[in-house]
Image 1 (cartoon, rainbow, N blue to C red):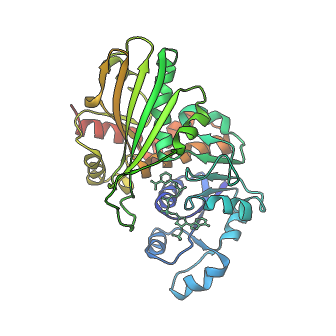
Image 2 (cartoon, rainbow, N blue to C red):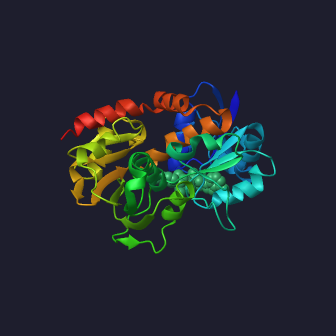
Image 3 (cartoon, rainbow, N blue to C red):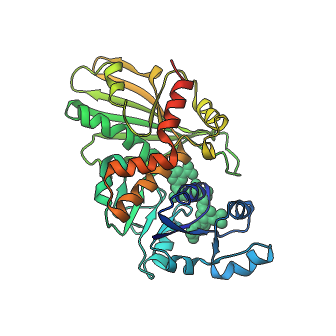
Length: 348
Ligand SMILES: NC(=O)c1ccc[n+]([C@@H]2O[C@H](COP(=O)([O-])OP(=O)(O)OC[C@H]3O[C@@H](n4cnc5c(N)ncnc54)[C@H](OP(=O)(O)O)[C@@H]3O)[C@@H](O)[C@H]2O)c1
């Protein structure tokens, strides 16, 4: 049995823990926690073995928490680590923990694939480079925006790639997640050099892609506005939507009014963690004008990357076929059922 440790128990770490702890084929070692706060109780309540830095063990024990060991020991015991640390901390973990102990790791989208703090050469997107991840030691799972763009772009490229001149995407990003305690600032903030463009180009190097990114005072979801410029006439709406009819993790919603509608519906429907784990094309926003097609799709920031981590794990560790990996991922996340339900709820 493959032994897995999740280092970090924040918004992403706790979701990864939920998913991986359901897989009966792996031995789930536990989760790493660095601060004594309410999330510790959450992990304890869910029976996740808790590991903390060696110099923090007594602090956690003083608060009455039962600790399974220190983080180095958990890593030593594991075959692979899923790093779910705060942006940038993954680099320190790699240098101080994973490399000295010779352990492979999956990193999250807040880490770098270039420059002095690079943790891996490659960014994974299940729809593009899934099978190339087999036996890689260090891989970054693309961020939510990057994963979402890949999920929309790749099927379009497969159908129309040679007919397309250029893709422009404006990312309208939520400022904080629903669970975050930090205040949402009343401001629209721009990003002078969004990393998302280079991240997508790292796995889709041939695309003529231009990305702008803004943050808006919302906690619900990201919204991407995509403009696709064709060499000749753009396809009509129906044939464009046909591309996504059977796409894993892409829902086609006909009458949502905004990102909050979808998030609230996911919570009301009892989806785990309130996640859809998908992108949602808003079919009523698709417009065609001569050579140009415009669309909006929303991207479940917290949920999107969790099945992607699980898929990446299937490739890295076992070299399973994409078909098998998607089927296992669907069993854990119930993506097809959620898609069907959402499409029914938001029918045109
Ligand atoms: N939030 C999203 O929607 C989202 C979506 C896609 C990708 N990501 C990426 O996922 C990663 C995690 O984001 P997040 O939103 O989950 O952040 P988060 O909620 O702030 O959680 C970060 C976690 O890192 C832990 N931590 C602190 N120092 C650490 C260390 N040295 N090693 C490991 N963990 C450490 C923190 O522990 P304590 O709380 O105990 O201090 C906390 O549990 C980032 O790279 C982010 O860019 C986030």
